[in-house]
Length: 342
Image: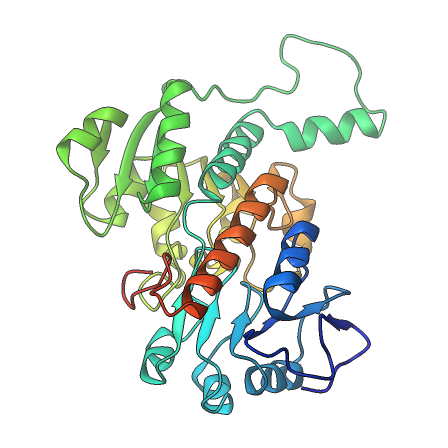
């Protein structure tokens, strides 16, 4: 692959004998990049720019291992351009909805991810958004910073308590359960929807009730938080119809994927009061955020930082290295993704 000024590598003009060529599409933690350069023929993205379609096509033709992230669309057409050389997609992140898993499997390309390392970080952010919206922290911060606070009054800046409120969790995997664990400590009641009902023993741990349908969950919840992958079934999972089923003045929190929510339906509900507020970390057209969301006094907008901690990003990088090294040594990588169970 032609080396652009934005790319650096341990060997840009020659192949390193015995080492797999690994192309990384975005900047990783410095210690991770340093270790990759020691172990592999690593091509790094020095200025962290998103790869263009042309750069991505060139990359898959010139590497044994591609390290993509959620910002990369690894579709069947791209994999077709890879030829026979690309053998491993070592994804940075647990979610793989941006990767055409069936196409990768058909071409005998192994796919790995980094499960578990972002669980607590994302759950922490979800709880922060729940508390922040319920206590109107975005609006409170604004009036203080703009010199509009006139002092304490008994009826000033009234928010809502979270103790006793019913939290509806859509997707009760690792992150959903971590959110339930935190919410339980705040005295919240838990109701959840999942493709497969959890064992009764796990439900007892969280004091959680099972909703047989998403409709049932949203109708029963004061706050709904989304922790499921995007696919054909979950695209616009929260739409006009489901928002209409929610309690008047309910709250919506999304740290999953922007495509889970029909954004226009959500904005309409925020503007007419059907939704009291929202806590958002993801959007359907990132990095663009609708101005109506930014303007709403009780919508907290974060820049997709659910996994953005030094510890989590380092742990993910170490998992990627372990997966690549295991594959290069002829073993099945520890975090291999099986289609349908990503």
